[in-house]
Amino acid sequence: MDVKLDEVLLTTPVTELGEHTLIEFDDGRCILTRRTWPARAGGGPEDLRLRGHGWDSGIKGVDPARSVADVASFARRAEPRRAFRLPPGELTFELSGLEGKQAALAAASILGCVLAGGGALIGQGYGELGRSGLILGVLLFVLLLGPSIHLATKVVRSGEILYRTGSGRSALSTLPLPLDVATAIRQVDEVKETYGRLLSDLAYRISNPALFDAASPETEALTLALFDWDTTFNHLDDPARVRLASRIVASFRQARDHAERVGMDHLPDDCRGQAEKALKAAQLAGDPNATPGEREVALRTAVKILDQVALYYLPTGLEAREALEGRRLRQLPGRSTS
Image (tube, rainbow, N blue to C red; front, side, top):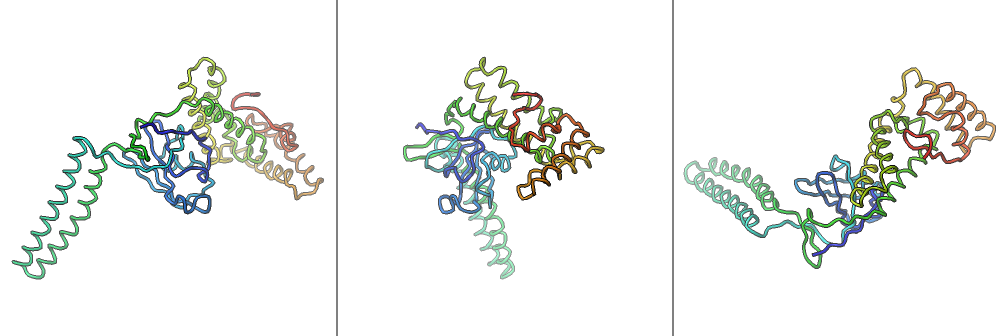
């Protein structure tokens, strides 16, 4: 059976996903399910579930505005490569064939042994030890029954994960993923656009300087990936282009997450105090509620401080003025122009 997959950008918010979304990671595939679908679709926090071979993670109270990449990386503790919208259907587990029959037989055997053993314990306890023995037998039976059912379920579900639609079932691991180069190009363009927007956000740039410092390992990885894209794209085949685009998206997420986590701690100790003053001045300079005079004084203060600090990954005074005047900067990591 052929399952039609439509690739979606990793920045797509949860509220725009369907009930099931296939997520591709470097080491396998998972399906992200909106458990509250369709009751809460598009309104309020949602409960999600990420399932794959050897992986089952529930996520409750997710902000529907969060991106599929954010949710998948949080649940899987790994960066997703691509995401695909699945047609209406459900997850099932392969139980057919010799392996499936053996798994079902093992599950039935476990349950049968527990039931028989529990019954024997109850009977023996009642006949020889009286009320105390009966209670002990019941307790042992109850203690064994829960784990056995859990184990039996695991055995039964140890086969191939399938996705079932009205026209049949397909193995999750063998679903053909389309090589959508156009989507890959859009993803890279979106990374560049987002980076440019953040670069032009003076307060963000001062607050999270590691994202703009190519000496930071995470930003260096993004720099190299973008350099490879710009210099090798015309020489790559479609699968390689898609893989490189996924690498760029993942690198950008990692670099941005790292920068926002360390914040201004990335700055040298002797520059941090001045940078904090520049940040406050930049925030006031961009405050629409401040008077024109207040904004101009704040801008001059920010420009003066930034020129004094003179760190290569912080904006210069000229860049600060241009950013606050609305000019979009187009520098990419490690380069002066894009």
